Image 1 (cartoon, helix red, strand yellow):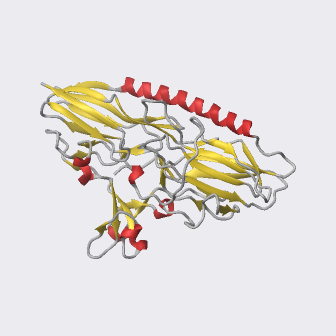
Image 2 (image 1 turned 60 degrees about the vertical axis):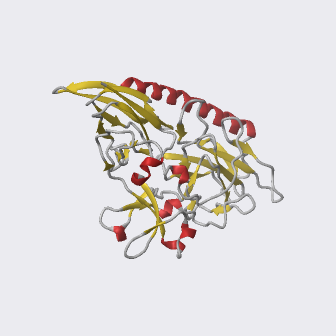
Length: 377
């Protein structure tokens, strides 16, 4: 199950201009304007990246009563985000939470992150309201399907500029801000918004191209007591882009060699799972269920449960299956690997390959993040 196949708590359509989603909408009858902020972006052709960034992430200046349209960019094929507007000084929520009723150490996708704070608002016709006192959350939404989340900014009429912060809690550290300016100060112009978003996009892209090449260059092999181990980079990153690619995508090894999959991700999580496709459905790291006694039951969405409040998504973080991949149908997964300095998850996992063949694999969190191990004699 890929991130974009998780439950979509919010719905809507994305309006994208070229690579960067931005615009300033018409003035409403009440005199307010609508400003568009892009969520994520479209990678250059042939690349699978997540821009863990907002466009623009800063420098947007609005007035009290204006509306902000957070617009997910459909060009990010493996992206998924939420947008939470935060009161000053508030801490971000983790996307993973303890699931205490399912035993010690059990994890679930945090419903505080996954679900919108108010599912009845967030559309263009009925925006949610943010007054600075309470968190307002869009809920989780995959990027490829598109989503828009409209929020009216209703802070007290400021005499001095007020900063409003917004974050994605799926990717810790993905954040942005806007300024609510006094009415006597002009709001941002369309050209200013466009220029800031475009400059940011170009800088993000240059950084990602460098990181991708460095990931390719880091792939290596070494011998230890007669055992050769080949290293593959399972995702790398810059502060603003997650390169969701196996680097290199195809690796040739000899029978009996090991492959160490090392991730240098910053904000995302991955798995290395054999085989690619439905054959590894049984070791998916995410499982939607209805809470039940004595055992939980599989679910597709809250509507699948007799009581929708009993719906949750379990996170199975540990390795599963076999770790010696000896046939094209052998099932094995690293479990979740991530930035070990920022999470409790390990940053690497090793598989061995005792037989000749061509073995395809994937990240079960990002469907298009795939690779191939070619084992020769």
